[in-house]
Length: 161
Image (cartoon, rainbow, N blue to C red; front, side, top):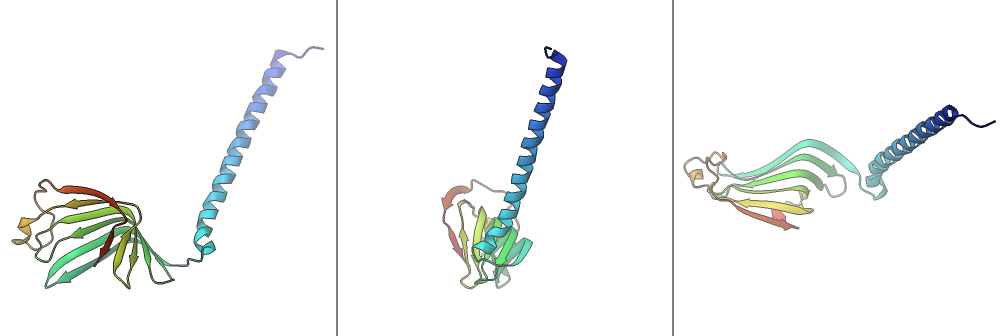
């Protein structure tokens, strides 16, 4: 008795659906395993997270003028040594007399509160810009005009407050 085409089509369709479900199940299982593995990495290498924060800012002022400001969208502070990992960082330098508006920004930095070092972990963008209006208005506002800033790219930058 020969097989009919309709039976072959049904079996082929069921086999294809079964394969799609099998591949989707394997993908979801692997994704779940990777997500859990990433959570276990700090424990395996001996790092213990003390605190995490969304939004982090430090600054230094002298005689009513802000010298610099470090802002990060996320900070993870470790118990060992008190160091912090900063993500999406922007450092703004105003200068002692507020005549500068230099910006340093990058995706990953390490902050050591004991030494005051902020060290880049990867590529960093730097914009150097004079702010002559800073003498008249020492409020650390963004200059009205950003005229021809100098753009630099570097790696391994260390900023010390």
